[in-house]
Length: 310
View 1 (tube, rainbow, N blue to C red):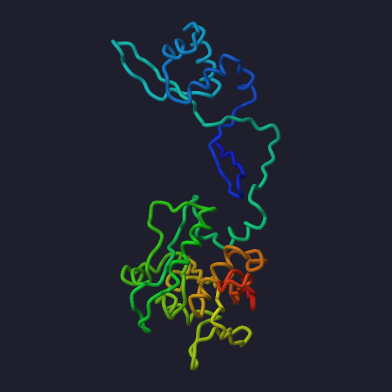
View 2: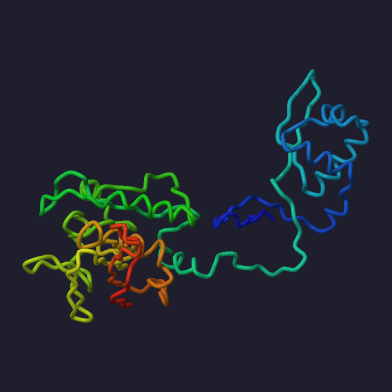
């Protein structure tokens, strides 16, 4: 049985392959067989291996047969040399282990379960399943604006890298590319609000908490009937994709680019507060305000103003 051996190092979870064998297999190991296993990190034929270990060929073949039968090694290639078939052996896995007590433990830290639940639809077979959609840096859309918050997606992507890989498809798209390619029918994380991101503009009216213009831009909650005007305010929302209800959209957007940064900080740093009690399948809205706690003129923290599950 092939499993993953997970190691916690520097706040990261590192995994390597481990082959689970029957306890009787380990009973076959001796000092000689362990030396053979150490040498078979790279494919070798028994004859060459016997010379290297200064071991009689018959003795080495004896161990090779036992190790192969026990599941430690396997034939990885064969060559015909002067009519004689030459077999090359190598380890079947990077590590080997046995299960003494069959009780699996969830290795994820409890707080990261919230993140995995929130981004559940975006993680499939350990690969990112969707697109991160950023606003074009060129003037575009109904307001002819250029995005100044697209680079914040890098911080989000680095964070999501703890939970999945990029897969085979390029995962970042400009909002203009999504429109041109009719690529709306997928899971999307949208960075930036309707002023600078045309995909955010198109879903804005679908939201229970939305961006509205009344002499100036604000975030308006249809749920609490409250208005939020502070430029550092942001909206974190998760809804069903209106173009394909089997997909989801996560919106991370501020009234201005500082607010979008606050939304990114919210889901990557303050997710325990933001996502507490979140359940997969529910629409989610959170309004937060970016704060400069260390007084350097840059947003580094957030304050939750309103949070709703629908």
